[in-house]
Length: 526
Image (cartoon, rainbow, N blue to C red; front, side, top):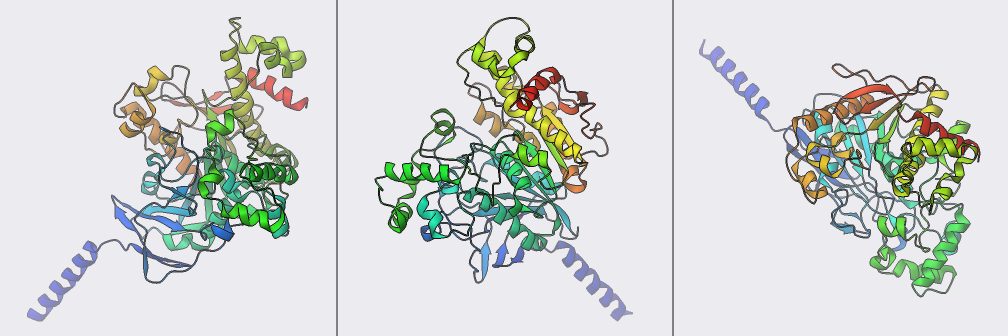
């Protein structure tokens, strides 16, 4: 009797100890063991190297496999973000920077019994010259709590990420070249294929998504032969879809710009000596103040942006989509109601000239009150040309190829920020809702006049849009219980999901159809 009681007590103690045991926080990847941190139901592994440091002789080389380490490497802190010019006050930029920056971060549910989990991979924006994984709005805890493995990745920026020179071309003529930032993204996706199972992720269910330049990057991945098979769904937030972001026509054009940069640094030689001198330049000289502001508004003649190299970038997304040369995966594409629209037409005649015979119709559509106000009309035309019509074009092309496509427009402004954004949701403002990180720190950072916590309406919008994104990552369909129905995109119906100013998500015929049809006609006429 006593022995049976003793055994029962022992079994109960063992069971209680097992229940109280901490979540295992060490995983083994191909290069060694990583020590993560468990907090509030999430297990995070940060600052994980997915490639060797791109410094010294590896500056302007395709990413190489990282070195192994002995023992257990701490993965408690985010790694360095990639070097870039500063833009004070931008909530999408980190501050701890280095040329050695090829790190990624992984969040997963702390519950280790869930089996293979869908994987989401975030690619930040910033014009390919700014950005990183450090900002608070990009942390993946909320996605992990919804049952995903969430990964954010760094990639080289500016001249570190996009650079060509005749000496580089001659050094390794058979290697991919010029688009090193895109190569970093591909290398990170390859690392995920090899290692994500260690975190409970399913390498056969990977969704890539990004905003602005991150969205442009998703288009590159969708159309690049080098990214084939590395992901299975895609989400493009404010990423255009017709033209390649800042792309030089070809490698030769990029080489000429590289020579101009070398000369600006006093490097007049060519061949191996020029390349050695370029690689010996201090990192801050390579940056030379390059940021989104200087790139967009000063257009420096010593920076090329991406190049059509024939291996990583084969041309504009529009050409590939029309020809059916792209990854056949489900897609979500959309943009914001008051998104970015870079049009610098000096007067109304120049602005309306591309509409040709439709000039009068365009003027009526974009200036129905006959105000003649160039800045306002130009902003709307630029928005449609750069963001809204290309998103519709992408959804149309995917649907035409028999692929699930969903279009959205985000036009909700948080309650605390409404006074500063009366025209609607600005570029990138959907991000903290998608990540469910909208709150007082974000509001204080982006607002010079207003502060406050997220309202219940703000939080409801975040819960809704993140639920759509999570459902899509899990199944390729954003719909789910308790959510308004989001129809597949059908060009004949031209319906999109509108995240409206009132906070409601509603499937509606595109209210800007007339404008977008006019813009599409200008593309067809080229």
